[in-house]
Amino acid sequence: MATLGKPQRQHRISKLLEEQPISSQAQLVELLAADGVVATQVTVSRDLEELGAVKVRIPGGTMAYAIPEHAKARSAPDDHLRRVMGEFVVEVAHSANLVVLRTPPGSAHVVGSALDRAGLPDILGTVAGDDTLILVCAEHAGGAAVAADLAGLAGL
Amino acid sequence: MATLGKPQRQHRISKLLEEQPISSQAQLVELLAADGVVATQVTVSRDLEELGAVKVRIPGGTMAYAIPEHAKARSAPDDHLRRVMGEFVVEVAHSANLVVLRTPPGSAHVVGSALDRAGLPDILGTVAGDDTLILVCAEHAGGAAVAADLAGLAGL
DNA sequence: GAATATTATACAGGCCGGTGAATAGGGAGT
DNA sequence: ACTCCCTATTCACCGGCCTGTATAATATTC
Image 1 (cartoon, protein in one colour):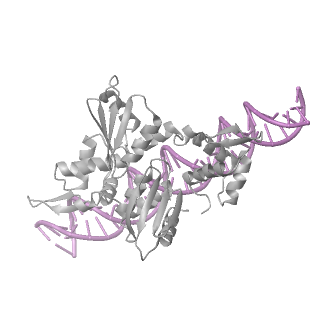
Image 2 (tube, rainbow over the protein chains, first blue to last red):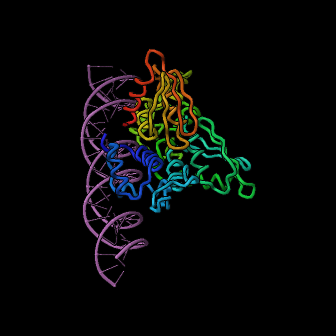
Image 3 (spheres, each protein chain N blue to C red):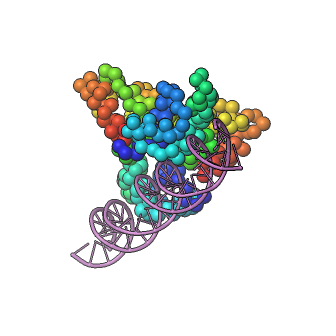
């Protein structure tokens, strides 16, 4: 019960920021500690960056951390995508301007979500099943090129 | 490009077993090597176990590995569930005989899939959204008990 | 039943993500 | 400009997962 994983801690941070104005990372460390979550200022600093948190001026004139709406689901895009691709994508195929990714059972949605958040310009949209993911590519890009890029990203 | 991840390797093994009869792990190692995938007999042994592969007698009278249909989506259930829970579940709540799990965006399906495959007797079914998962618990079990179990499993 | 082939286990090392201690960088206020 | 406070970076360590070598256990063949 000592350290608790990173996702859980970031989730609590996110909630704390919504519940009350927090003006420093030190303060956040204390609040987490009061919640039984042990973390240092360094860790909190990295968490805030990954969460996309910024310091904003609030009514009282003081500064407080907040997570912009547009960043709510965009934490650490590049790194995250690369890791998810490497962990879950087992096969890449393409046909015309479609790319088909295969994953272990139940993992297609994570990959789809990661791709959506990455906002790659050549990918118009994704549809995820259980272990299969279909990407629609921009016409000018072509499925083959996108498939090659993604295969590289997945370490294949 | 040398080692290639475990999921990818297991996927190739799975396909190789369907394509042709394979009677020994040594043979499988060779076939993988021909595919550019480096692995030893020990690794293959572990992969086959995780995949639930068994040796069956085929028409010719020889033995060959095959993956039973019921094991197609049940690889390494316990360990897998524990890891997925620890990595993705950030919050556990319950109401009556329902349990609500929260995950980072896009990860709910992986957790749901892992729970389904684990086949926990007290969980009647799961419904996954993007970052939320609802479990229906057996009446005799009750949401609170299941929630407590799952929270423990998630390391919360 | 002995010899051989095949598979599983024990142990150790590598790799990578996550974390913390120390420290450097940046602002605000005086 | 100096000082203080806050935040970001560097470096090193820990721990878990994964894999390989060596070896034990098991199955197969004669």
